[in-house]
Every structure is written in C-alpha cells, then in structure tokens.
Length: 131
Length: 81
Length: 111
Image (tube, rainbow over all chains, first blue to last red):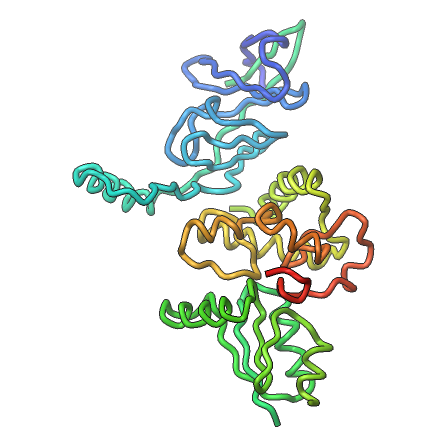
C-alpha cells in the first residue's frame, strides 16, 4: 500500500459511471466511479494518447472516444485496439485524401499498449490517489 | 458415389462438424475455407451463396443438392437419394 | 492482448445488448467459449468482432451486419430460428440448444 496519497476529489464529484481528469504531482490521471468504487488510470489512451475522460465508462471498462480502444480500469490492460473508421463514399479533396492516406498507413504500425493504474482510497468523503 | 463439396470458414465450429460428418463416414469431399481464399475465389463463393439464398457457412453441395447450414439429416438423405 | 480478458469483456457487453432483444448466451458453454475466442481473434485482425460463421465481404455496409451481436440486422430470421446463425445466442426460453437446427432463411419461410 502506497503512502503518498494525494487528496483528489470529493466522493460526490462524479456520479457512478462518470469520469474526471485531474493532475496530481505532474501526472495526468482519470478517476472513474464504477458503481461507487473509485479507480484511477492514466489519462492518455494507450493507443494514440487521446484523453480517456472524453470516452465512455461502462462497468469497469473504458472506451476511448477517439478510435474506440478499450481498457480494463482495474488492471489497465488493453483489451482491444482501434476500430476502423468509416470515411464514407464521397470523394475527398486531394490534399485531405493524401493526408489521411499517410496517417492511415502509419496508424497500421501503432500498437495499443496497456495503461498505468493508480491506487485509490476513500477517506473522510474524499477520493485519494497515489500517483 | 455422389460428389461432396463445401465452402466453409476456418473459424466456424459448424463447419468443423460438417467436415467431421463426412470424414467419420469415410466420404471424400472437397472444401474451400472462404476466409483463407484469395479475392477472386471469395467473390465466386459469395455469388454462389447469394444465388442460393444462403447467408452463412457451411455451404454444402451433395450431387446437385445444395444444403446451407449444419444439417446432418439432410446430408444423410442427400447421400442416399 | 489477453484473450481471456477480452472474452470476459465481450461477454459483459454482449449480455447487456442481447437481453432486451429476447436472447441470451447459449447454455452450451463449450460452444460459447469457442465462438467468443474466435471473435477475439477476428477482432484483433479486423478491428471489430465479426461473426465466426458468416462471410466478411470487404463491403462495409454489408459487413456491419455481421458484427456481433448481429441479431438486430437479422431479427425476423433469428427469431424464427430461435438462435443466431453461429449459435452464440439463443432465445431466452431455450434449454436444449442442440435441438435448434441451422437453416437458411428460405427454410423458415423468409427470403
């Protein structure tokens, strides 16, 4: 059990199913309320660094809002990678198409890594996190 | 003996059961795993499935008869008739 | 990525989706486990968990209709079969999934 807990948010600050991003001791952390139990994960998605508090929390699974990679908030395990986007059928302006092709090509080589998790404790109506 | 051929998927348990049905009875058969085939073969397979009104695998041909799905009773009667 | 952890997560998500549609996971635990494992592999390859028993056509509009659970896209058909094509899901009242035959649409009176 860690002994450098920092008081982060009050227990009432996020409703069950919600998430909030905080910065503690220079670490960007997202606190998740999973049915009344609090978990803390790194803010940055293990795929392409998107802010996870802008994704969705379902049970103890967080889905990134950028490309839908999913993580277990208890273990930080990466469960699935990005979902291919639908660009539609309309022709794109050539420069946009070229940029997307370049990005798409490089994204094939991006891995979805597991994310860091942080210890939490609830004390005196506050959620504390050890960054 | 009637010719038996089928289109299957390497990921589908019903396809394994279908192959096993004929293997257990020592009935020779040809098969193509759709997911491991090249684009042209896949297109050909899809055309046949669509024409027969089949939406999934296995897709079995026994003589002139087409059977969609794992249907051991239909396999048996098609082999007999 | 951890296959068992992913299977567990898919189980969690799918359970919530198919219940309101009148379906549940097949009581055939071995079949369920095998199919979920195939879906995890398909998801790792294609980005989404496709049905392990239907063709991936590389036509997005049609392929979306076989992303598991694909029940909503085949509602009338699967209700007539009391199961989905691959058998991962069955109607809630089914206790003997082996008794449910795997038939094409025209053999249950549909096109």
